Image 1: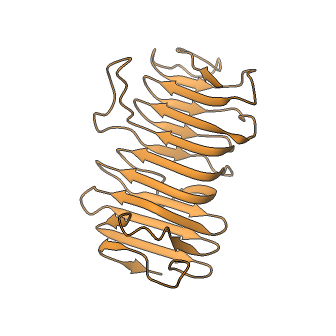
Image 2: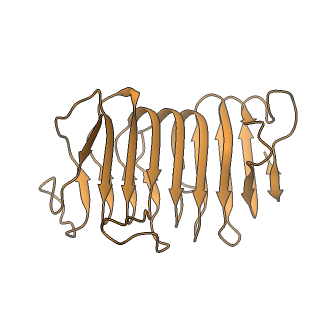
Length: 212
């Protein structure tokens, strides 16, 4: 079961969009289906999505993705700078993931991929997730603030002098897989409780660690 929604042009009557941009501004669809939203340009979530507590949500855009409403799903995948063979575009090193204030991303597992940044130092992504995987490739940083404990599977920022900033109100745990790492020129972790995995071994880092 998959619901696919997307439409080009002006979507909310108040914003002029390029032909390839997509704005989700509310639509009726099957709330018991997995949901895929894709845009050949930028993608903005401007209306609440249904609570997909047992379903999966996938957001994909050739350009930027802006989360301007809270979203909840069992598994969430958000990919900016997404390459598509269907429209033969994307994957060219441009595309960020941002979020409006007073919104939250809630999921058991969150996967993020961007080229030019995930959140910002002023406005980090606000999440309430159990497990996190994130990748940023070209420029910018990864900035995420999580409510509760956070299991890090893999967080990679391959940009020159790039930063990974993770803040959790609970603990930050390793996934106990030596093949997955937190990798960036600068790594900053802040936890309300512990930093380390379930058997008190340290997280895997490369090549620089800054722990607050």
